Length: 343
Ligand code: ADP
Image 1 (cartoon, rainbow, N blue to C red):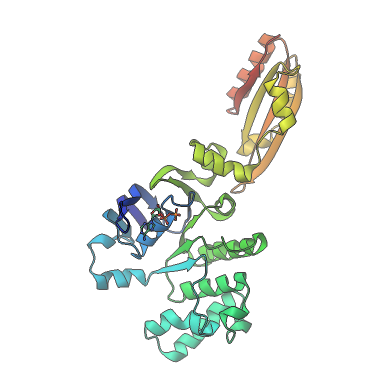
Image 2: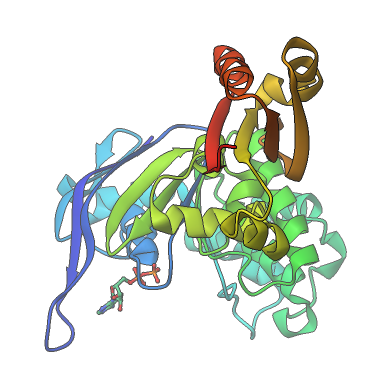
């Protein structure tokens, strides 16, 4: 549906060239919500703007619906772009025009007959929940309402792809939620593929199916939201994940662990999916001659799948602990030693 092949973008505006995209390879499937996350300057905007040719790639390919944009004529690109809507962090509405005229704009430009425009704009305003605001001006609306108008305008020509450039970054958390729910509904009701860039991991967690982490123009990690959130590999991904997963140990426990403060053998047990429902510790206590001291626990949900970890001190004889660990691993539950201070 959208594919980047060895895509690079170099800007030559200042004294030194800036390599904003550096050999990007990525495939986004039809109907999925794909998130790209990275710090400011990572290259996210450059990437998303290559999809609708707001930026021309320096090299590599951008393939949209089977068409390699880099090989098309200007007119052919215009045709492909009709199939792509975009929403922006600061909404990009025309303040001098009414809500109706803003939403109608892409249809007016496409010379759609007036009665059809009226009908389509009414449907769109109804869909975004602002049917009563047609005659208002953007300045009379809240940020969330402005973004809803931006969304209605982006959907006017019935695109199959929606690009979201930091679409919720200017909104408060509650409004962000309602806009994300609306995007999810658009994706589900109309099977529209959504590519969104953001610096907020909570946005990715809430609605994306897959995620790519960008740094210095490259994709450094990629996968399903579940995989990246439950087992981030790079430092950058770990940092992003920790902003939403709150799996950091409380300071007092960290201190106790660092000082081995009376603690013997401490393990971190990672539960995923079905394993979260298993009464693992009580099973272990029955099967083996050991006791448990739970130091920290955290269970959450990712894409509808439970996920979490427990930090537990195992108290007992060495061989019993080893047998218990082997039993946990047999169940394909990950377990990692945090401290070992064998008695
Ligand atoms: P992000 O969206 O992740 O913040 P950008 O794609 O905006 O990243 O920017 C990537 C790099 O490219 C940055 O170093 C930025 O300063 C540079 N850049 C972006 N747009 C331009 C431009 N039009 N001219 C020159 N440099 C640019």
